[in-house]
Image (cartoon, rainbow, N blue to C red):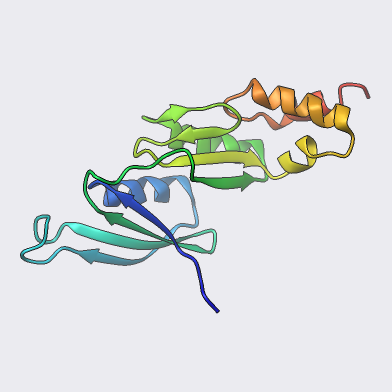
Length: 158
């Protein structure tokens, strides 16, 4: 059966980016590091790529040069169990990056992340349109998502 691996191509910051992600996510494991040899486009010994696993999913990060950039059309969504997780991931990933609305941020390398509570889909996708609408409106006013505030908006009539 085929597999899909997320491939992140950085200018020259692969090692720095993977190091940041290791400091953010407690279960990130580097599986392999490849370095440029003699005659490569970067100094010998410089990281070419790193393969890592995050929450059981394999990623490859590579130094590809300045022609590679990231955009908001592709993001990595992290569904969190607690507000403490949201706060921790948000604080570290947003440092030097850009906070966007609705739980989105772009880290300092240009990778876009969605840091959201696991129950977000149930709140904004509820069959009770009024409750879902209130949760959606609350979310639209936030950058970093606040689980308690989303639930308050959802339960406003109760």
